Length: 413
Image (cartoon, rainbow, N blue to C red):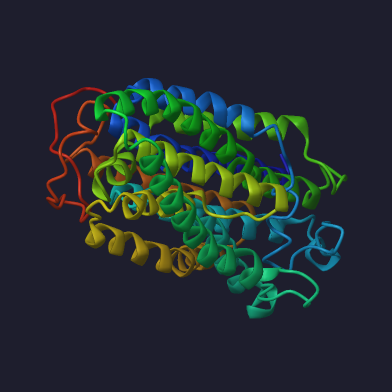
């Protein structure tokens, strides 16, 4: 097997691994409120979300076709890799993509360990930006567009990151206020039971929307890698097997649950009632689907968190602003920290000699780091049995805030 083909295989495998981490990292975006209110049982909720993520991944490729070309200067206007990057059969470009993916996965797994719902989208962008800067210099990054449309890191990443949670807060706050206003004459017990059924529908819509947005990012990375290595030539479409494998990877990750982050979103921000949950989920779905239609690779985490905060504001419930503050810090540092991880990964590969050897070393380091963090998480596991226990604010050994551990042999995510 040639060096180019070996690195291509590693890029595809690691890209699918990122999709997998995206799934369990972001399950909370759709299902945290439904689990918190009891509208869905924990295992049933993640199973439903997994199926709908799988379906949603096939519904659109708008984000897939714009995800890399919007932020890094490694492609021409038509989406093909720049010719000067293909002199070695695309090997250098493949190593950059691999380093970016490694940086993104490391940040995803670290924030999962800490129970922080940070953005998988920004982790991916950060990793790619860091690896590109390390390889091509600062000019390798498309920081701003040409002025004709929103583009570059500012237009496609920073502005949506600032706007989407604000919009979600406003929509969810108004929606929650209206829900309680309209149903104020209904007995609380009947209102809660009725809206739990509504939550199932709204949570399903968020899962579907998540699939249409987040799975696309990995499809774009793999398709670019295939084009760079000469295995695919159509810059306007995504191979079916890429769609299917990415959809399956994010669905499997979603099914594992990501219980640590589900607990933070479902119990840590605000005590959620069923009307709140439905308003928050409906707001998230509306914002995410609109962004997918427009081709914006927004963070579903930012949107979901904003919607939950907005539902608390609309109900005038007690919001735990300390937890929200920790989330905000994680949001702010995700792009630079994932970028640093991507850059360091590329430099480690460079020191290893480049090419297939570098790719193998980077992949081995990724596996070792993820294994260590998973073993660390076992000290205080959070799972479907204790995800809904009362929030006591106790810090975990990892620095996050988790539920008390329970004795179980179940694999914890």
